[in-house]
Image (cartoon, one colour):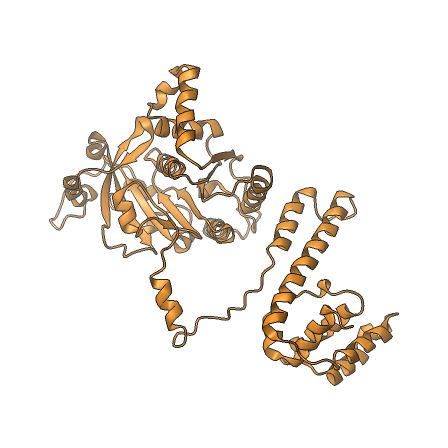
Amino acid sequence: MTDLQTIILQTIIKNEDFCRKVIPHVKSEYFENEKKPVYELILSFISKFNKVPNVTALEVEFQSSAALNRSDANDILSCIKSIDQGEPSDTDWLLNRTEEWCKQRAVTIAIVKSISIIDGKDKKHTEGAIPDILSKALAISFDTNIGHDYLENVDQRYDFYHLQEDKSPFDIELLNTITKGGVSRKTLNIVLAGTGVGKSLAMCHFAADNLRQGKNVLYITLEMAEEKIAERIDANLLDVQIDQIENLPRDTFKTKVSKIREKTQGKLIIKEYPTATAHVGHFRALLDELRMKKDFSPDSIYIDYLNICASSRMKGLGGSVNTYSYIKAIAEELRGLAVEFNVPIWSATQVTRSGFGNTDVELTDTSESFGLPATADLMFALISTEKLEGLNQLMIKQLKNRYNDPTQNKRFVVGIDRSKMRLYDVEESAQTLTSEDSGTSDKSSSHDFSSFKI
């Protein structure tokens, strides 16, 4: 009776379409006994000649390979001859069965590796690698899509244009306008501002609003303590001035938090890491641990903030590594994490020294690396002046926007309540001041811009 592994080998060499679909996903370690070296011979032949071998070619390759000296050489040769005897199976059925088999084999191998790590036989990995090994095995999937045919895939493209995308909306009207309803999954979104202007305030406000909407939120801080971030979110959600939270009686405080719990189905997890020590490898391990121990998968991730993360690919600044390459690497890794876990990621960055006093911030005012705005999907600056502070307002300027045309609503103002760590919509009449406050009026201006904080 022919087993599945033999059927797969038979169809690979007799059906080129099937071969091209499965080769990227099927590893040689999935095969057992003599079938493993046979599959390795097939892979080697395809790599050398860019075409599928027949049995005769495989026999010749085998005779000149190191496998000829193996103790099971006769079994390998018999296996090669046997795969010439059957007929190629139905492609759709076999693709489905091959995918299931790959998943089963991947999980089995992952379990064996995990046991080896626990027993101390694997010296290359620690027990912390086990969740990643198992999650990769469980994620095995055949992606048979080889590209979008512009002329042929008209219906799919039209349906995509009218697809209701899963977004995380804002409670600020103009932020929803410029992003067409909120930020998308698999994106990196950046807030640019100077010290004390409101980077962490904005991210805490967005995180609190996500929780209010019933979403799961992960807030990673490398700057402030977990309790300090929680305090800011308390001020926002409990509608209490931040300097008065500590004066609330315990029962009152718990009652207010209970009311928040009753109104949302989401959770908010805050995790602190030491400055400049954590990278996406740590974040990935945290996400795996939260999923296994708390059944928690975030809908949004906030990282406060990007410039004080570490890179998982570069060991640190110095030598041949400069700030441009290092920060760009961190940005790329965070965006990759957003794609991997299908979530929007928010982070922040500082302005340069010259940008700190600039009344009209540009992308070039991004501190340390221009590679960050090159990677981000959405990037906007927060701008504060004495006049805006007196009105309890903050100006937002779009710097980069992959969601919409960034020239529309290029600048606008929002209300800010620093005592409650909150942003809010302002009257439409307030938007007429944005050109004057940004120093970009068509009329020549000789304003003193020394009061601007960016």
